[in-house]
Amino acid sequence: MWCELCQGNFFDEFQMEGVAAEHNEIYLELVPENLARALKTAQSAKAVKIKLTNKHCPCLRVAVELPSLSSSSRIVTHDIPVGVIPRRLWNDFREPSVPDFDVSIYLPVLKTMKSVVERMKNLSNSIVIEANLNGEMNLKIETDLVSVTTHFKDLGNPPWTSEDGCQSSAQDRDLESMAEARIDIKKLQQLLAGQQVNPTKALCNIVSKRIVHFILLHEDVSLQYFIPALA
Image (cartoon, rainbow, N blue to C red; front, top):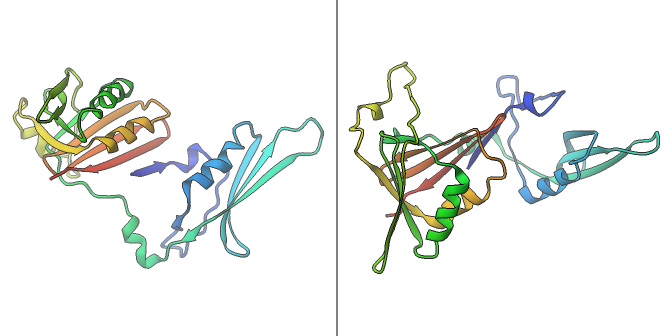
């Protein structure tokens, strides 16, 4: 999974000093549950300050200023241990590159898709996602005992262009030809179950029999999920 947040949408003030002027970045690893637990206390906060500290060990300090009936402020501080990733490993954490996809299509309403997948997971451990450039997508499971397909139509296909401004090579494909990939149904269910906010745009890129790439866009957050195809 790859998530990208624009700092201007979350912080009124932002100060960053990376490892060097030409590498104004710091790579950290942490236990996500620890950060989530700290941010839960900030739901009714007047202000939140996040700072990287290094007293006894590297920590992400989350200082939450809570409303108070008195003139004095109440500040709750969480120190979350983090690991600082050395520069020699940074390439391991770059945004994943995606091969040229065969089909890109907008997803149906995620709530509807989630309901379908939850029913299908009781019948099979894998699911086939197939789509074409005519706005059609199918979710299929096939076992020795049962074959079930859910059809979605008129979803639309995003207009992609390559870096040189030309149309994506996928646009040369036969509109009715389906691209498909079989993936682990539990991974797809986890993706759909984890969506707390309905995205403004949700789309799916399929590289036939190799990978399914999901992109979910909200006002100030973009999420990418990569689910490899099963053999």
